[in-house]
Image (cartoon, rainbow, N blue to C red):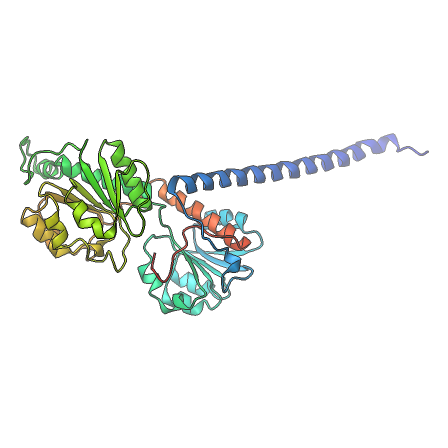
Length: 386
């Protein structure tokens, strides 16, 4: 038997040690990647549970138009594209900052993330899946290219629900405590303790009734918080009466007027459909108590603006908190800006320090599922528009 020369041992040991370290490093990197993926999956499950995200009943691979994914165009931060690449290995991910860049990159793409426009859909002949960031999809589903029967659309529905719900509660409490009146005095440096709320005294919310129109993802989050304040929660939804335990009664759409008569606060959290468009009109406001408040975080076109202004000026309700309006943006000379007891925020209720991260997590998971041919979350019924 021949043995290595003693002088050869250091080099041999070095090679052996390098191999061991390489294997250890590779195993460590693999372990880190697996741990990171498990953390992501745990976060997705928490998101699904918290927001009640719905998984499609049909797998992507079983839909007309699905095929192996080669190219994805995404409005996504360039320094975070590795998050998308990690869940879609082998797929070309093209990050873009604007529509012009997306148009340049769309040829040959199977998926488009962050945009839905006629030019992109026209040029993107191979597009099958479109993921929009907003919850509203009215303009997208109205495009003829979306109605060919071979497109899959997902949105950001429910992602901003916690922020939207807190915003609705904030508007309600600001109106109930007359903060809008005091803020006007603050701007004028006027220490006036007695303010005219128009309809009665400050409103204590505990034990009062709040009607939530649209007990979906946003409405459920609002209901949970209103219940936490000790309010009696009643609600309506489009097609069924199921609701969480903290909602005292769930009615159907045709019961909305009757339920409005019971409410001290009405909160609009309904999607915009043919049934909800213009539903908050003169008849609705006449049904409300003159001491009740109207809060809208749903869609601006569900409220007839002139009827709302007339109701406020006639004293048919005590005030309104609006994150959405019709028209939008609201022109600087619009009468709504000058209507007493109205608080307006410029469609910002869904913004928060957590909303964007939830959205990115949803996009990552939907991309992983789409590439694997699995069912996606927050799939839009293109025919119904939500």
